[in-house]
Image: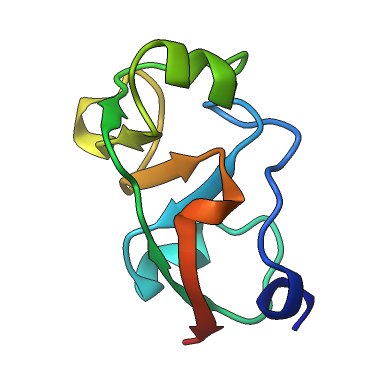
Length: 102
């Protein structure tokens, strides 16, 4: 409920640094979540996405902007790391346009 009320906040780390990570569908959330609970459905403006093929745990939103991108997309099948399902990462919480219970 707190996320719905106040919005998302970037995390502290991950394969693309401290961003907000999104699965592409409800089924994939089970495999991605560190904790189980409620599933939220969101409308996210990913803008221009950098397609990633390897981890960049030091990446920041500022650095991504300098490169001309708004988000990161990990297409699982092209990864050099184990990632079973694709995902998007954003760094600006304002890009989440709608949040509701799935």
